[in-house]
Amino acid sequence: MSSLLGCGQRPIQLEVSTARLQDNLRALRQIQPNQLVWAVVKARGYGHGLDAVVEGFADADGLALLEIDELRQVRSLGWKKPVLLLEGLFNQAGLCEAVELQADLVVHCKEQLHWLLSSSSHAQGYQQGKGRVWIKLNTGMNRLGFNACLSSASNSVETLADDLLKLRTSLGPGRLGFMMHFAQAESRSESYQALSLFQRALALLDHRPDIEPISLANSAAILSQPLACSGWLRPGILLYGSSPFRWQASLDDDQSLGQSMPETLRLASRLTTRLLAIQELAVGDGVGYGLRYRATKPMRIGVAAIGYADGFPRTAPDGTPMVIHGKRCPIVGQVSMDLITLDLSQQPQAEVGSLVEVWGDHLGVDELAACLGTLGYELLTCLTPRVSRRLMDPVSVER
Image 1 (cartoon, rainbow, N blue to C red):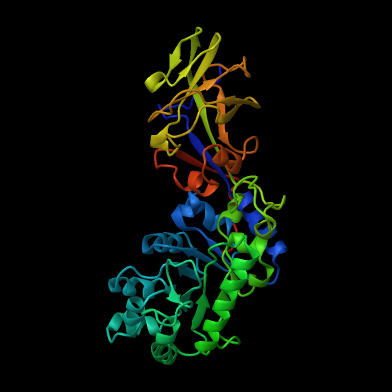
Image 2: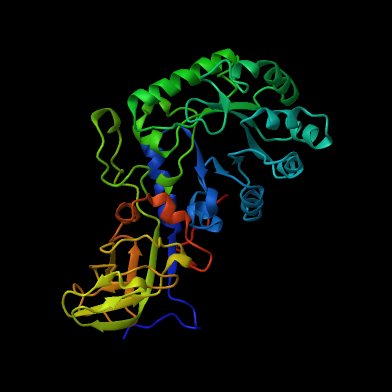
């Protein structure tokens, strides 16, 4: 019988390969050479852990994340290069720590801009620091950013000119950048329109391309839109070996650009658990809450230690695959808080303690996500703290 983890620890575990993170960054640089790279590490490094991404992305030009707490952690781990706060500050009080931690700040609304232009000592201190301020422009996604679409909008780029002049003066030359985010990077026509709006806004704002960098391309745009791959790239999901597009998506010709994942990018994590029990079912026996599934023949059912409290979706339908000893075994019955049940018909050798691969080299996270009606992004980032994590092949390089 295969052994379970010792010391009473639940056997569910996420293994993270720092070598694969490093290889994926190197491969991405080959896809789009001679560009600066923000490695996006929000949501605890897409669930991989900040310690893992600081190691794995040591050769990136900067890290991009969301929260001051994450920024504090990567600095404590030894990261000395730029760090970008992708949504800027959530309140003016955060300016003091942003100065101390030398953060690059995104500014996406007038409130954030006015915090920087205020006379407070913290704002003045930031203006004398080392970070750059990135003005975010809304080119059609309509989430964050100064509106480049409607000149009549209260937050339009036309209303930004005077404050931007003040900001340039207070920050000094070369301390301003401009960025946008594609709403539909896989579409040629939509992306062309967004790029046109961005270029129009830059002209209205007296952009100085020799000293004021731009940042446009996220993972999807890096694969789909070569014209957007200038300035600072912002790859996220690609660096973890998962796709920004739906697995085997069926799209029309206008939206089918760059759908395939480069073979050089490999999944950097593997989620595994083990069988805790095996049940024998007779014809008509049900399994799980609500007895959603009933056996149509005599069956062996494996009970595995993973559930929705670990971040695995409760909505997983019957037939969702997992892998045991190289064979796919489908989920049968309702996912519960701590357990799932698997049909072992294809793996008669399975026993208590057998390893179950939830995703990994035998079953990619994107294919699994497609079975669950979601994207790899969600599965990677929704793992809960009770899932243990182990770093594989850590590297020791200059940070």
